[in-house]
Image (cartoon, rainbow, N blue to C red):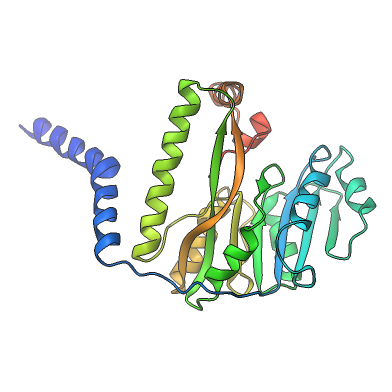
Length: 275
C-alpha cells in the first residue's frame, strides 16, 4: 500500500513539475501580471567578458559589441584574457579603441576571479555579462536599458534563438526544450522574478554585484538569486543572441559527459548552449 502511494505521489510530483507548474504560471501571469516600467533610458553600460583562448573569435566579438545600437560615449568593454596561450592577449592589445579596456592575466584563474576583478573596475551603472562565441543583436543594450529604467529591477536576462544546422530530431528537441525554458522564465518574470538568467547574455546593476566564490560553477544562478534576495526583481526582456545547434555539437557534448570529463558545452564543442 505504501509503495503504491509513493508511486502516485512521485508521479504527481513529476506531472506538476513539467505540466502543472507551467500551467499555474500561465494562469497567474495572465490574471495578475506585475509588469515593470520600460521606457527610454541611456545609462553608461559596461560589457564585461572573460576570455580564455579565444583568438579565433575575440576580434569578431569586439566588432559585434562596438557596433551595437548604443551611444559611443556611454559604452565600454572590459575583456580579461584569463591565462590565454593562443594569442588572445596579443590580439586584445593590438586593438585601438578608447572604449576597449583589456586586462591580461598571465595565469588562468577562472571566470569567477576574472569577474571579481573586472566588475568593480567598470565605469558603467549597468554591467552586461556575456560570452565571446555568440552574436548579440543590435538592439540588445537599448532593450536592457529600458528595463533598468524601473528602479525595482536589479537584473535582466536576455534570450537565445537556437538556429538548427539541419532538421534533425536532436536540434528540434533541444529547440523545444529551450522554448519551454523561455516560457517558464518569462511567466516567472511577470509574476515577480525568475530564478536564473541566460549566462551568455544578461545584465545587472553594478551596485548589486557581490564577490563570486572561486569554485562557483553557475554564476548565472548565484548572481540573480543574490539580487532577488535583496528585494530586486530579475526579469526577462527581448535582447537575444544567435546560437548554432547541430548534430555534431550534440554528439561531442554527450561523448564528453559519457567519458566522465567535467566539461561545459562550450569547452566540449566550441558552441554556446544557453544555461
